[in-house]
Length: 163
Image: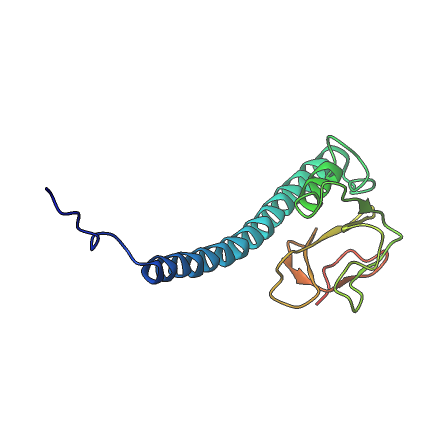
């Protein structure tokens, strides 16, 4: 008769140690993935606003004015700023010239929108919230002077990115 060897295989302790190690490694990978998603969203916002600057210049070339560049779909930058804001939430809104963009103490936009765009005959500025800003409670701002930077405020009827 043949003897059965019960010494092959893994013990329960060995299996538990392996499962624990796999769990720790998975949590590290998932934490890194969330950080990469945040950076990716912010990069998409910055790219969309960079395209908005070029579109605003085309808008200016056709009429020699920036008036209504923020509110015109198609030829203006309204759709591009809204696209940037939708990287934050699918229901994002863009507020108009009379609304200031300023974060409140909770880190959320104090306005009813995630983005603000101001325009006048000679200038324009737009700002969109960021998911992971380098400066706490700020957004990405672009304007007609060529500025493209993080800012915490864009006051009502202001056409230059703040500090």
